Length: 65
Image 1 (cartoon, rainbow, N blue to C red):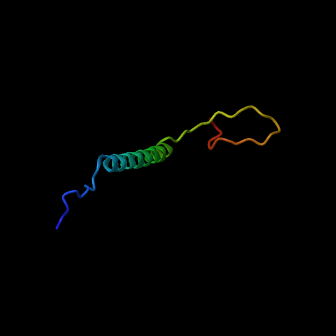
Image 2 (cartoon, rainbow, N blue to C red):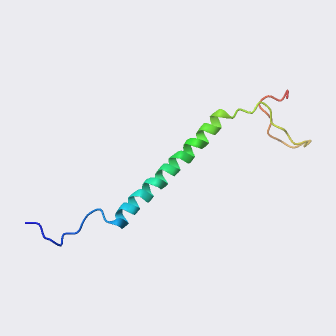
Image 3 (cartoon, rainbow, N blue to C red):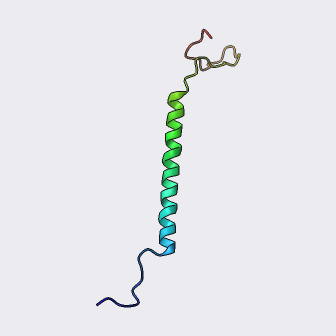
């Protein structure tokens, strides 16, 4: 027989914790997807290089810019 004072499983704090966790997970996945999309969609042809003589510097992929 079921007791009349049986507690409900889905209380407000549990529902809030579930939705907050889902929101954080979706936000995290969305931010990472955005970073990956931006990294693939932006392909700069030319990168400005500082004028440094005698020092090892990074070069552009296409230095003919």
